[in-house]
Length: 282
Image 1 (tube, rainbow, N blue to C red):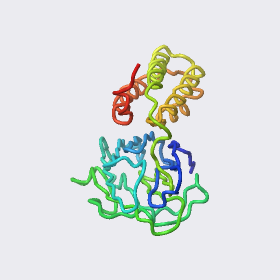
Image 2 (cartoon, rainbow, N blue to C red):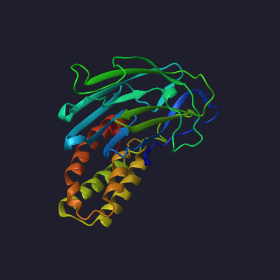
Image 3 (spheres, rainbow, N blue to C red):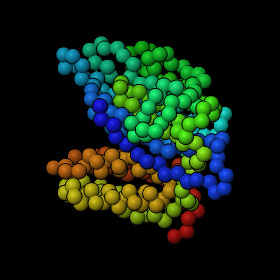
Image 4 (cartoon, helix red, strand yellow):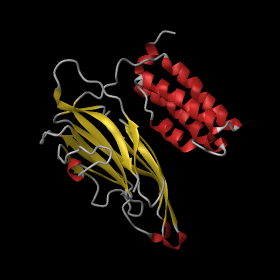
């Protein structure tokens, strides 16, 4: 199996005493399965995964799954609960195969994380209740295409890192938290950098429409990622993944529709995550 980092979420230490009674979102990483390729998008509000899985007799199942949190997970206080809703948005298991498509597990099921070799086993994030059975979300059993999971953070063991993990048919997505930090954005939201970001994303859209070379697209994505980092309020997950996939692409026109979709979603992300921008001066 190949393990790669999905995205790194920037954190800021509080000035003064360490916040031992809270954890901040440090990273979102994944461990890919060899059974299929998946497109994953994830941030502190939720995420999505889409993949096709080939069974015997060339039957192909298609899966589009989302997860949402009832609150931002930038920071979680000791004793605080949060709920995750996993939904099989558009799924089709082929040829009568029946198996669990998605599930999420508490920290006591996370023994190690390859990206964090010093991670120590703990049970600091536990499951309180769920509407799901052992197999989680699936599309073949009525009433089980969506499930809720409620977790709570209670410090039970001295461990600098804790995590919970999604399992999508063997493709793992880990939400990693660090003790004593705040997941609040590093510095104030920089509204003005969003204007430049908008122009860069439009440039990517135009570049894909015209079929610009991957070198130009790759460089432009790099500039866009710098703007996202400077904004202090936006997720870099999609553009980081696009930068990896577009490298060496023979025809960048293939990425046009997904870039257009990202451009539309970026507007809503700015509205939800960069609220101060409504009061920014030009």
